[in-house]
Image: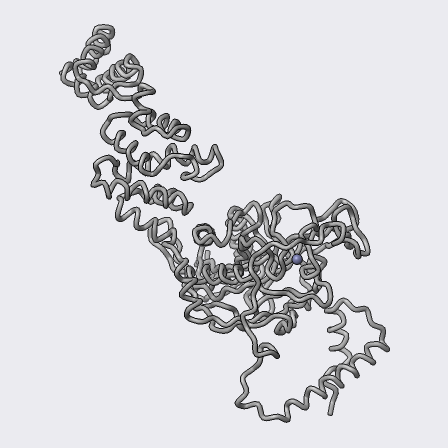
Length: 495
Length: 102
Ligand SMILES: [Zn+2]
C-alpha cells in the first residue's frame, strides 16, 4: 500500500442580492413572486436607445459590505459589458465590472469548530446585474421571466484559502450574518438571495510526490446543504479519478459541474468552447464612479459591530457559552435587544436586572420561540428589554422558576404590566416561606414512609427517593414551591 | 498589410453572436471589419505616452439615481413584441444546458 495523503483546496464565488427597492439601472421594483414579466421596463428589457442610470443605494450598499469585509475601496471604478447570448439576458450582455472593480484585497474571519477563527482572503468584490429566470416546462420549449433581470448583485470572490466543507459553510453563514447585520441583503436562501460557486481541487501527496487534481467549479448552489455536500462529493470524486487515471491539473482542464440534488452528486456540464470569450469592454452608456474621502467616511459611519466580534465579546465579557453567543448574534435585532437588557441592568447597578446569562436564557429559551411563532423580531413582541432584565432577576432570586418565567414572558407580549405584577396576578411566585413549606414537607413525609426509609438507609436508592419526595412537595404546592428551599428542608429533616 | 481579421475569426465572432452567415457574407464582413480596424489603426500613429486611459468619452462621473420605484410596463406590454409567448412568459426554444448566467 502506497503512502497517500490529500488536502482539499476551495475558493468561493458568492453572489449576494442587495435589498434595494429597485433594480440596478432602472426604477422597476424588486419584488419576490410578482406576476411574471410585470416588473420590467425598456431599460431592463434591453430595448435600443435606452439609458441605464446607476442606483446610488446599490452602490453604497456594496461599498458598505466591502468595508465590512476589510476590502480596499477603489477611488475610481467603471462598468463593463460581459457579452454572451442566453435567453434570460435580453441585452446579450451583462453589465458587470472587469478590470477595475470597486473593491479588492480584503478578508473575512470565520469561526471554526475549535473556537478559533480563520482568516480567509477576499480577492475582490464587484457589482453586477442579475439575469432573468428560465423555467423549464414539460413541452419542447422554455419559459423566460425577466422580473429578476437587472437585480443588483454583489459578487464576492475569495482566495482558495478554505480546506474543508465545514470551513466553506462557516464562511457562508458568517457572510450571511454580516450582510444581514449591515442591512444590505435579506440573504434569504429560499429566495435565492445568496448563490455559491465553489472551485474545488485536491493536493495529493503520493509516495512523497505532490499532485494537483484539475479544478472543478460547481455552479449555482443555493443552499448551505448543497454547498457542503457538493464539496464532500467532489473531494471523493477527484480522489477516485486521480487514483483511476492519474489526471492532474493542466492549462485548460478546469471543468464546470452542476449539482444534482435528487442524486446528491455533481455532474459535468457540457463545455461550450467559446463560452469564456466574454469580450469585455467598457459600457459607453454608464459613467465611472469616483469615490472621495467625505463620501467614504459617510458610508464608513454606517458600519456596526460585526456578528463574530459580538459573539467573541459575549463569551469574554458575559461568560456566555459559544453556542449561546452564536444564537444571540445570529440576528442583529436579537443581539441589540439582549444588549439593551444587559445595559439596563448595568446602568441600574444591578438593582433590578438579572445577570447576562439569565437574560440570555430567557431570550434563547422563550423569547426567540415566541418571536418565531409570531414571525417577528424580539423587539416587535411588545415587551421592553428592561422588563426582560427584571424577569431575569426574578429567576435569579428564586422568586419564580424557569417555566413560570416563560409563562410570564408570554403574558408580557399581551399586556404592559411589569413581570412582578404578572407573577402575582397569575399566582406564579415561588413559595420560599420556610414555615409554609415545612408543613407541606411534613405531610409528604408522612404519606411516603417507604421513600423516607430509603433515604434514611442510604445507599443506591437514597438519591432517587429524595428526588421523588422533592417532586411530591413541588406537586403539592402546585409548582410554586422553591425547589432550593424545599431541598434544604428535606435534607435537614431526613438526616 | 495582412488582414487582421481572417475568415476563421469572422466565423468565430459570428458564432459568438449567434449569427448564421453565408460564405459570401463572411467574406464581405471580414473585409469590412478589416477596414474598420485599419481606420482605428491610425490612432497608433499618435504618441499617447502621457495620456491616461479613458473610461468614458465625457469628463463626467458619479451619475446616480435615487432608489425610488417607477412604474414598470406590466406583463401585457412587456410581452407585446415577443415573437412567441406562453401565458405570462416569453417562450423560447428549450434550453438544454442551463449553466445560468452571472
Ligand atoms: Zn426596468
